[in-house]
Image (cartoon, rainbow, N blue to C red; front, side, top):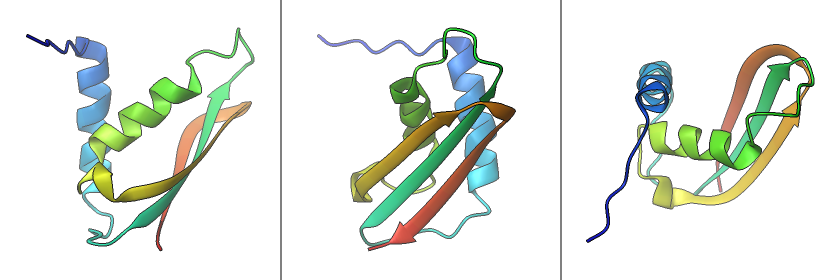
Length: 88
């Protein structure tokens, strides 16, 4: 039996992001997502890009199976995440 555990802090981040994404258009066709993660100062470049991408995908207000393309970057700057979703 498989068991998936999501830490409380991650659950809270997903919920907060999901509320913000509810304002976004709901897509029904294939999409491309561009994610720009600004993490503040360079400190061992944490968190890892793949974990940040997963958090966003798990928070989408539509089926993440519609995502055909992902482009993600981690940058130094004022902490924020820019999400661009386009229909293909």
